[in-house]
Length: 138
Length: 133
Image (cartoon, rainbow over all chains, first blue to last red; front, side, top):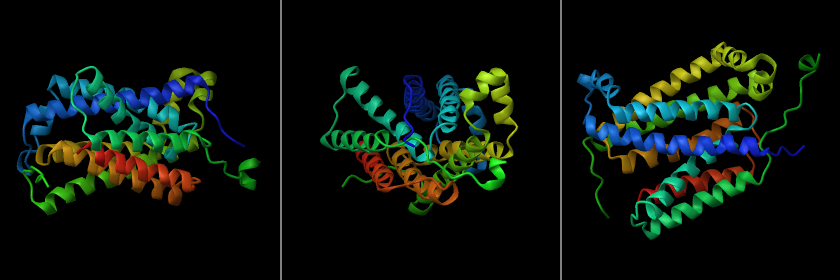
């Protein structure tokens, strides 16, 4: 049986892509403001939780987690994971066409590879069909 | 080749990146296994509402173990980002996680990781590395 996804489920995957990449970007920006954390002062990690960029990143990552879990309940891990990588492409394209940043030939090659990778799995079945055991069927 | 700016030595750099990747893989596989056992969340929500769906998820020990692994991965990522440049830490840990997850999903979740999915993991892995250049 070939498992295909409804438009609503593709929207869940879109949420997985966007919330993960934007959330990671906010976290990264916040941690550069917090500064280096040493093994002897791990309490600094708790201070990081007061930084608004880190808080914003955590809120988006919670949204990511909810949509990610929903996707995992009806699709394979190896089907859902490439979607999270597609978020990197979204961020790169936003930085090129919205922030007018320069994208090197390496990055364009990376974008093409990720799009191809996501295309490979998106064309295939979303869920592995496992034969039911006799005791499960009862 | 441009040297990587890092506040840590080579061993510490790769040990922290590997820790992020391994805990992330454990978290992904445990949560995916838990969600497979729980079943389609859309069906559960239609039957028992959003609270029923949350109860089903939070009541799973495998899910909670997965969350602990993800929390460990999150804090080790914060720790790593404070020591290693994001341009190395993020793509390196993400790439290792993609490849590791494909193998772990085949071994532990018995997913059908066919040639197409292996190719996808490798393409995404290479793509993430190139994006950081």
